[in-house]
Amino acid sequence: MYDKVIASKEYIENILNIKPRVGIILGSGLGDLVHVIEDKQYINYSEIPHFPQSTVKGHAGRLVAGRIKGVDVLCMEGRFHFYEGYTMKEVTYPVYVFKMLGIKNIIVTNACGGINTDFEPGTLMIIKDFINLMGTNPLVGPNDERFGPRFPDMSEPYNLKFIQLAKEVADAHHIAYKEGVYAGFMGPYYETAAEIVMIKRHGADAVGMSTVPETIVANYLGMEVLGISCITNMATGIQEMKHSHERVVEMAKKASVNLCTWVENLIGAM
Image 1 (cartoon, rainbow, N blue to C red):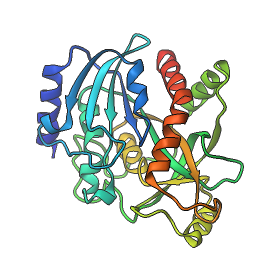
Image 2: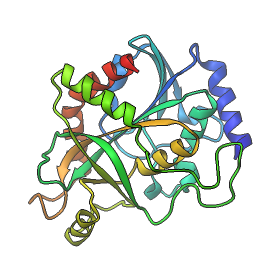
Image 3: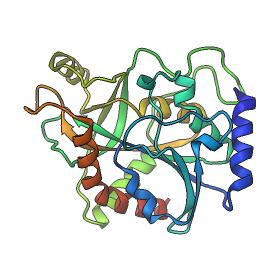
Image 4: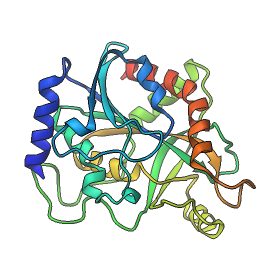
């Protein structure tokens, strides 16, 4: 895997005009952030050696490089999910590539369901911790010490300094937000009412089908992570209407205006 990651890294490095300092992973319907990137360069996932391909609606399937507030960034416009049939190593492969490119800070975003009844669709949530309910994790298997340690620490999966900075930036730009714990559920179905009751008892405020694997690997690689969720719907048993991916993407697009302003100014302050 190390050789594959290096091959991907070298391909991207030979194309880019920048040396990215911040990596960004965009969730379903949250692709509008690329509009604030200046001097854009695009690289389709299909062009990159060994890179997986995105199959989910709302995920464009390309890297976008450029500058936000003068900071060199590399953005994933479309991520990979365990439920698509990828291995966990494939799901998190781009994070390894980000690290080899010299990226130290990573912002992960997602569209997810709200469990905390103080939330409503459109709420933006700073992720303060995660619960892994996917039944496995991307570090299972032989460990390559060139990437990271066999037993990485997860006591601060989301960097406390970045969380505080996110609060300050949100307050300065009058962006409403909540804080909460994100539960990663395997999917690809929307959870049952009984599962939501269980997940709530575990202490989760929101539930989704991504983010946790990338967070684990980023910490393993020694990167600093900030996570922001967009609550696009309330979870099963809390909202009365049935779920649909189209509605999730639609709500994410509406909320992305505030998210874009938030992330743009966050990066400028990092």
